Image (cartoon, rainbow, N blue to C red; front, side):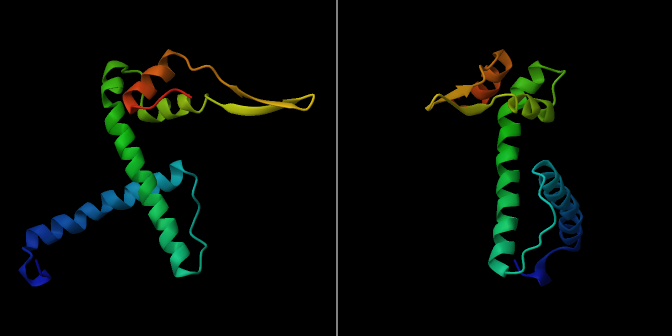
Length: 122
């Protein structure tokens, strides 16, 4: 549909909805600790923007998948669940020339989060 055929109400609604897109991008950049874009080459700026949008897309899917868990566990928010996931760590250790991986043992909440996301435990 061309711009000349777009009803005024739809144009205003579309323009007003941009604030939600802009807020999502700001939130994503904050959560991912992405600073300002300092790239000068067009392809790098495009890549940066793509990664921000991809991260927001993944976050959106994770939020949808975790909605049932959040409904059950009223004391948790999406952000708290993400913080809890940060407690799982895998470290490569070296002792006497031998290397091995040491992974944090997931607790029950970890298990439930991974189950809702449809992912295997690490």
